[in-house]
Length: 360
Image (cartoon, rainbow, N blue to C red; front, side, top):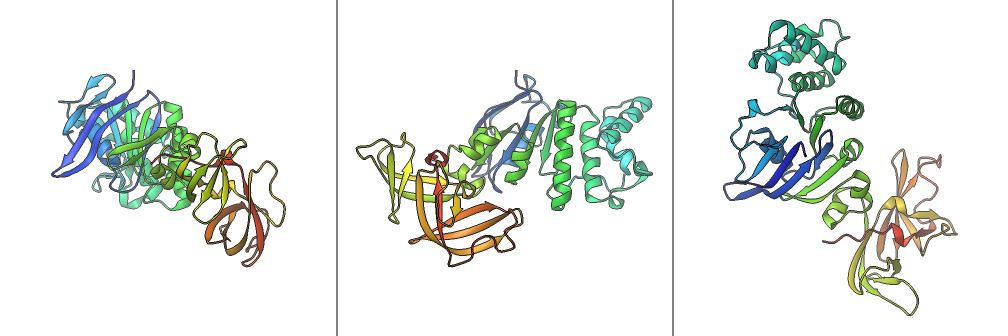
């Protein structure tokens, strides 16, 4: 049985449909990310599960129990908000203990639970941390307090609404790893809202890419990135080169896409004849001075138009006729400008198996 189940859930705000007949199941112990642009409905879904909003239609179940008439404080959920929502007039100890006091937990049990929660989020070693107030903490420490407050009540489901949005990149990456390790350690079912593609891919067992209140693609991170089902999902996660034209089949095996720019690209055999679009990730393209990569079935020559040094890799914009193709090459010590400079003639090559052919 799924820990969380949404059955044809919709939410309207006046004439605006924020969630559109959405059905979803989250397994026990799963880490699921809701990923999408601002306004796609992901935070609304989280608030519906939490009980802060009532669905216009459909039903929500937690551990098989309908939440139709269950208020938020009686749902077995813990929630961490984007701005943490810590009580500024309460110290760390009282912030973490708040949910337990609402539930009238005895003093000894409460103290043990707060101590355990602070230890769980690695705050127990900081001097006098229990007596500090939120404004006396760093952003990372505030995030840990918010997480401890959510976990101290031992919820069945943990809801996280972009909890790392206020952190700098290095601290955000550190907290991502700590959260994933903690989630695995305690085995809690987690639903995580983010607009950060990399964050969703790193943390999740499955990712639900959302658009206009609906799920465009739901699947494991590798599937979402390498075989997106829709053009929107392919565009939202990662970068892609688009080739549009017409698929034709010659007498031999396979098929070719004759692009609008005059290129002939080998495409997967399952593509039907007629108008088509294929996508290709920049990192799937090999760039060389003369010879194509072994195993490639499309080889084209072009001229480097621009070079951008990005640390871990170099981005080349290569002009092929009227087409500008983006290529990522792993940085292997080629210097701050990469191996090629604007104006250099280069050869690009790739495999048809690496092409993405999502439906609209």
